[in-house]
Length: 294
Image (cartoon, rainbow, N blue to C red; front, top):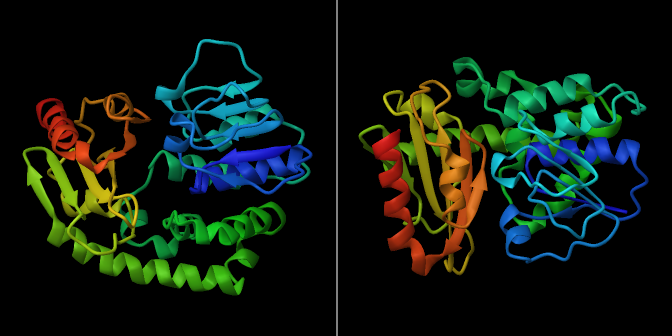
C-alpha cells in the first residue's frame, strides 16, 4: 500500500495521519496535481491518493478541492473543508495511536489561510506556520526532507522537531528567504485595479518565500496572481491565484477559473501549469476575469 500526495504542508500531514492508521508498505509518492490530471504518474491498485485529483485506479481517495469533486462512488472521503488532513482525521476518528488534534487544527488554519496580520508578518513567532514555510521548494531533491517531516510529525512534539538540525536550518533559511522575498515582490509586482500581479519570469531562479506576505504589502487589492516558470528549461509556466486574506471582495472562484486553463483548486486559491507557448493566450484571460470580477 502506498500514499500518493502533494508536497505541501497539508500533504505532509495527510501522510502523517495515513501512516498511523494504515499499513503502508512503500515510500510516499510525492506528485503535483497536474501530474495526476495529465496522467503523468502511474496510480496503482492499493494506492491511497490524498489532497490530489481523483484517479479511478486508486483504492482510497481523500480531497477537499472544489474543482476535484466527482459524482461516481469511491472509498474514502471528499468534502469542501479547510484541509485534506482534516477530512482524513475525521474519517478515521478514534483510530489513531497519537493525539493529532493540534496538528490538524494548525493544518486547517494554514491551508485555508486563516491567518492574522501578525502571523503573516512574523511567522517566526508561530512554530507550525514557520515549519510549513520550509516546504516551499517543490524540487524532487527535497523528497528526503518531506519524508523526514512525515516521520517527525508522526512521532514527536513540535518542541523536539524544531530542534532537529535539518529542520532548524531550514526554518532559519525560511526566515532569511522571507526578507529577500519581500524585496523581490515589491520589485516584480504591479497593480491593475484590484489585482496584484507578480511576474517572476524575468528572474533566472524563481524566489520562494511567505506566500501570504503580498496581501499585507498591497492591502488595496483583493486578489493576487503569481506567474513563474515551472521548470528549469522554461517550457512550462505556473500561475497561482489567491484571494487576499485581508480584503475579501474578490468574487471569482479561483479554482474554477483556473480549471479552464489546465488547473484547479479552491474558491479562494488555485493554480495551473501549461506550456509556455500558451502564455500569451492564457495569462491575459486569467487577469481580465479577475479585474472584471474581483
